[in-house]
Amino acid sequence: MDLAAALERNHAEHAAHLLRGTAGTWVDEPGDVLVADSGITDDTFNMVIDARFTEDTADDRIAEVIASLPEGRPFSWWVGPNSRPTDLSERLAKAGFPADDEEENAMWFPLSETHDPQDTDLEIVKVRTEEQLADFAGVLAPLWTPPSKTVPEFYRMVAAKAVLPDCPARFFVGYRDGRPVATAEVFLAADVAGIYNVATAVEHRRRGYAAALTSAVLAEAAGAGYRAAVLQASEAGELVYRGLGFREFGKVREHALA
Image 1 (cartoon, helix red, strand yellow):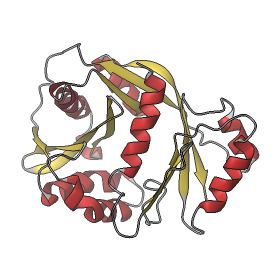
Image 2 (image 1 turned 180 degrees about the vertical axis):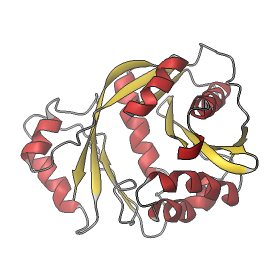
Image 3 (image 1 turned 120 degrees about the horizontal axis):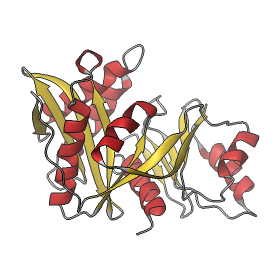
Image 4 (image 1 turned 90 degrees about the vertical axis):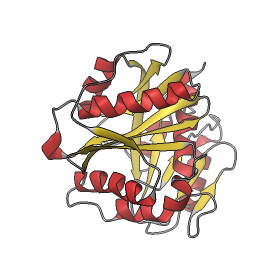
């Protein structure tokens, strides 16, 4: 399996899937890149991703994509281990869009390897209702400073589609004493299980919750017949993922288009 290609295709589908058919959104797929526009003023939900340009056309295509974006709406351009040309990040910087300081590791986990579930005091629930999805968003939003208003807005906008039984996005919430305190998501596409939004409320960290939620989504993916899980690891999250057996296979960079 080409993990680099699968990682970026999964990430692109993750960015676009809940937007397709949703009023006020836009997904452009010309064949050599994907642009996902949520209509929300937040580059968390507006992305350019999975670019596969030729050496000769890359600079022109970068300019064309930038020109196509709605004025005044921030976007992020993700450059991963399968992005082409291989100097795409440098070309974006030359065009006036340098990469963020933090480079993330692309990591993978073979789902044939099993490990014991993480023992915590959490009740881990697979999201099946819009109310539970609101709890999922409620854990994520305070991780911004100030707390994000657009995160709850996004999940309200896509809630009806996100909780459908056949949705490739599967959301999980960890509850402690009835309160949502941790999250994780697995997105099943491109023959891999993409792991996203592993998060723990600040006051509940260092209790093994991130590992427990990650284990839960890995079990979900294995149960669905998937053989490999992939993710982009922040510096803080990398220790958790390495402890669970994830291996590094590339780098991912984010460029802000504002």
